Length: 497
Image 1 (cartoon, one colour):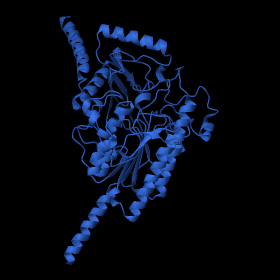
Image 2 (image 1 turned 45 degrees about the horizontal axis):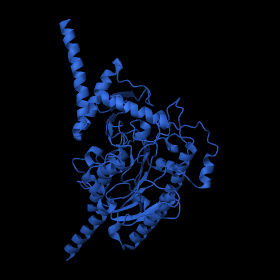
Image 3 (image 1 turned 120 degrees about the vertical axis):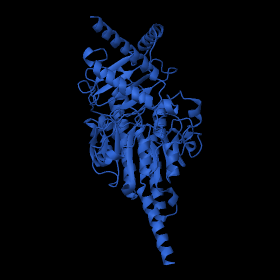
Image 4 (image 1 turned 90 degrees about the horizontal axis):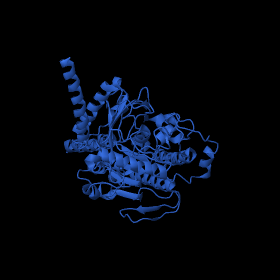
């Protein structure tokens, strides 16, 4: 009997420690948030004390990128640890039939549930399959659509996508629900009424600073009443005349920051901080006039780079500060699964960055990949890119002379009608030296001295494409075949000489 008791006690102890080893995960997602628009990233004009504090207590990944700079595909990649050509979500309006119904493979949320997590959603969704069909076990206040008014938005509640007007400011409505969730979880944990809800994964997705970006409370507007009209964040290219309403954009971010502070305070007061990993991420960047453009989807850094902050308990993180590691948004799902002790699907190109939390010098990616392709709604904007710390290589699909002529005509008309729109660069290839030209102002793809770097970046892109079975590999094959033919021709000329 004594032996049985010892065995039973040991089993309960192991179960208890295994449960404790799985931390809670609080994932906060902002919308259209440039990488350089938090104070800790070097922006002296923006007021973000709570995000700055989070970064001070954690790690700010200064070169984090999304694999597609647009709302729906970016969110799908977070769920799937895959790229758009793998999971089927190409843009906000273009996805394959399979992705419309759900996803062929289990999502990160479904895998977390299998590992014992309670998964909850609050905020913007913007995917076609309902959240309860892809692994969320609790759906609280949520926004099925991509955006709405900041005041009295149309929102849904629970496992229904029917929306109705909810009184209040959308950023505060989502915050109120997140605070309530954390407080309820803490009470349940203390009373052990709902042990099955621990650990939790909370997906808290805000719409700020997505348009309309206003209104925000008066005390937030006051922060920027004296912001100079010529203000630019650190990542804004010099000499560019077109720019956006920075006071309005900064105001939406500062209000978001204030509400994130409320959530973090609730986490502290509930006693959950010591066993909770907090991750803050932007879903894509926002140009605000950079390179003469507004919006997103383009391959420039202001579009693909986002703020990524991670704060974790000491068991998972041994240093704080800034990391230049090339972390991609697809890496979050792999990180969540490793935190849960769950295996990652073999066909995911994502990679857990947990080793970087322990050792800032831990080996990680040498390059990251990004793609966009929707020729129905965004004709002429398709591309693939690979980026290192030193170079960025952008490849567009091959087009015949007739197609190029038609696109140039279309874009010229667009620029005449919409003065704030600028046509995409239709060059087949572009190469930028990010060390000497961090604002991507000089294309080196045709410079003779840059050809070794161009060829090396082509090879990197080829490796990504082969690894992920990217059908766009045909774009690159044609370019590399052309280069090889040129090299063979030069070799034949040398031999004949």
